[in-house]
Length: 387
Ligand SMILES: *Cc1c(COP(=O)(O)O)cnc(C)c1O
Image 1: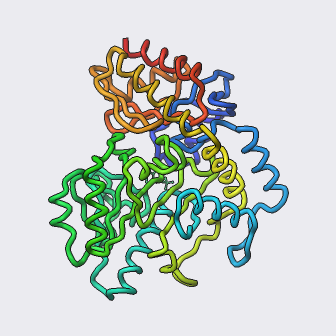
Image 2 (image 1 turned 135 degrees about the vertical axis):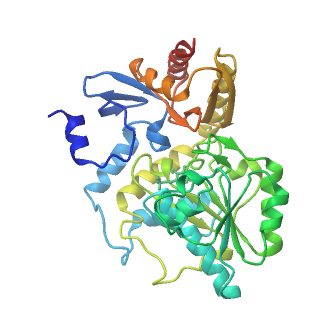
Image 3 (image 1 turned 120 degrees about the vertical axis):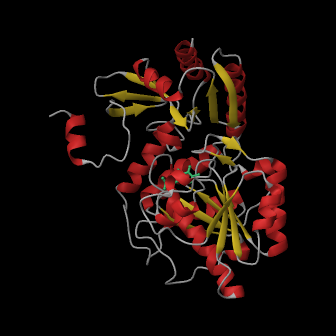
């Protein structure tokens, strides 16, 4: 029995998988079981922010696993202290709660928003507004938060108290933001929704509505955070500070992690007994995360991400078969003129290039450490596929 047969015989079929078995990786290249290499323009969906098995990152995780792999959150660990301290000081947030995924980080944000409001105003102020076309995760609450009808099926009843208004529609948001609302939650660049960036004017209006009505502004930076957009947080591009920001995907370089960051206003809402996670703040994740934080915030790193972004946007806009390019930093959506994104992604595998899709677009989330040579090589293959 080969790997794919064994896999499909025992793992639930929740993904439309490609017929590729990835065995190893180094730098920006993945290697399959037949020793074929692929330039990775997807970072495993934005998780391997420093590429595969970055030396400093791998050393830190290995050193940690030989020291202490896990302990209960009833005790303190220095590695979690370091990670939290660095993360709060980089982002300017007061405190953080660690989980293991983006969905968990968002669950935490939802709980903080509802309890913040309950503590201050009592019952009946629990509605959370999210945007049409958003994506916030796969748990029942985060599916309910997700503003796409295709996700609201089969699993009834969904969690109550979520409403969705169109992105960039300030009037609709104002009309929806009544006395029952405790939070407005958004992605600055809708990732799964097709790499759609919000208007700055809209984002500023969200901040203003939240300030006027004591509604918490929650930013889902699970995909956009940790340097992906060329700033540590995408909120920096928009000049706003949300009350809560969630992070996950690339934050620990490929070890499962989720973080819910809260400003002083709501950082003591959760108290003992109200929230928890067995694995949250796991030492391996924190050790990996510490390396990501120090690398991404090192002198010139994010400027390089911005420059590579401009380089890719420029090249793509001159590529035949490309209708338009969207996104921010190294989070890039490509609308094609004639070819279907899914077909191009499949054909790219044969040519040794890993791509992602988002709705009808091809999506790129390359490792932040990708080189110009690798960009050229990957984009050359991409251009040939479109020709
Ligand atoms: C991926 C993603 C999530 C869900 O993260 P998981 O780690 O899969 O739970 C939530 N929000 C956004 C914006 C995402 O991109």
